[in-house]
Length: 210
Image 1 (cartoon, rainbow, N blue to C red):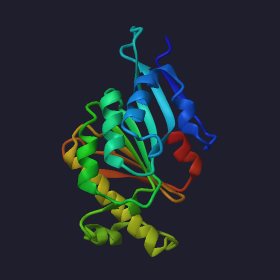
Image 2: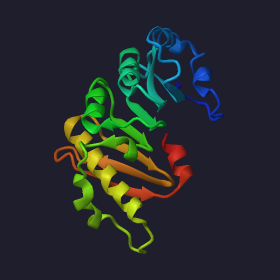
Image 3: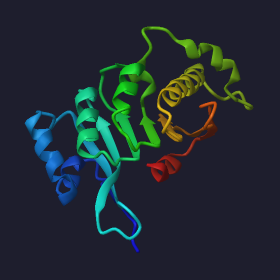
Image 4: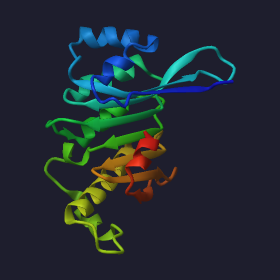
């Protein structure tokens, strides 16, 4: 029996509106308009899954959202309309910056979330002007000495950010990270909540993840 259906709009032109035509998103669309959030984000992916293997009931279980601004309102609305979302990808597209703990507070509103994707987030997140990940830069693998200082800093920074998220939200099991042309699949060790993983420099790999 079919368990999951994934809708992806790759046109990149007003693609949010195409996905919002689906019946599963009508209530969400109504709430979005009421709160005046029409132009603050786009949807790039929507996944629906059965509530149980033999159930006829379907829920939205995965979303890809491109946030231009109003991160708090957007993620709060999504969590209230789609509480069964287990895989969430957030792409940052705009000039606004957000404290990592603000993002964590918003992610806590997702009771089913176990996989988080972050795209182009390093320069959109901050920790009160501090950069505690600088001590991790020396541990970033670069066997061929090809990475720029910016790339090393981004990799160390995202490792620090994801570790902070993992320690705060025990349900999260994995992360997909994409910065420019670099991609990472990171997993979380259950007890220690330690984040580890492998880098992939492939856009096709990111497409498969999201």
